[in-house]
Image (cartoon, rainbow, N blue to C red; front, side, top):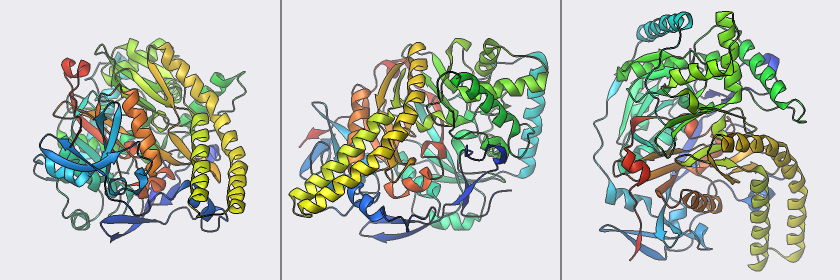
Length: 587
């Protein structure tokens, strides 16, 4: 049974209640209104109205919804025959221009290592490609239950006779050419619905189609999505918004779900495996391993949503021998064309404990790698266990920026960058006469007071991140450290922005594209430039989605990547080595 409308399960399981790790739910309803073409979304989840510092800290660090633009775009760029208004991201007045305030903000390379923010609607009008006809699918509970039975029986045979290699799964880096992006819409007013609307527009530029699973009234969703092309609806009997975690689509158009197994409602086996694994790994390090657990997928039986999707695509369905939630594995392609998977060590321990319980024998690390390789259609040598970077899922703190190259969070750098921005905001306000010196001193003192808590949290996370970096380097990956996850200064354990939980792919023109959650204007410009630089100039566009819903999804411990599941094809070897490149020319 799905939860009531507006109550979305927390993506992870809080460490604070490990023995009572039932799913936690928060409100996710959004009330929307239009004003001047910009969408404002009211957060009705976690209430911070009584926080005495809320107004102060919002003023220093900036609200998620940017202020209205005050300046006209200063530049015109040419993209083919099209003319796009915009400005360079390095412009100190970046946040005051219209293209920094559109519901989708797009950055493109503009030559000489610079990037520009351009008018998304003009880009859409100039580059729109025909969308496939929208479809309406209906999957019955009987079909899903049959899929569970069939895949469960096949899994039992593998437990007895040995793992059977399956098709290679879809990569999560830019070596994917997407055809569809599957989502699940809990209600007409949730974050995923907003993202589906925006991704349908991005898909009209980049060449993918949005397939939205729904569990409520089809009519209400059709009404909400009216006017948005490039979306199909899929009625399914059971689902949730975190579609990234429920399966891995295969290049053979199939679906591979994490193992479905009976466990206590509090996820006893998974909790024990993670606890034991962290105790072993952190022994002698001084680390306590007190961050969230995974396991919500099996608790909620959300593998059913992926089997429903597989029923529609009619590809081969498979229950994995392993138990790995999608957010805690990262699949991709190395520069030599070999597929790989990064596996968070929590998932490695859970798989080991599950297999040992179900077979009654011990499993070695090599045997577990062989099982994971068979599940994902990869070679065992390319199964890479890595340390959790202080997060229950890898994708909350890392992402691939190029084949074989990983961008990993640096909490200490992120902390200092936030503090620098805060001090600069105070200095600018003083310079412009918005505050006097006494007020500025008060604000700076408040920043320094908050800095202590922020640095303490960053220092707590740093050792985990360093262990992750060492594991990646040992496996031959290039690691780029960057502060890309920012926190609430009044509650440093709470993310306010996350630029790792993103989607990367190559479009039909052979251009590499990235789609990220939105944030503050200065954050987006900073991260866009970082990602372009780390990707060696191979990215043609970065799209940032609605910043006003970012806090809502992060408060549920998930982001854009968590709410989407691309399907598609592997790019050619030629595009792997030499992607196409779209570049703006100054008019």
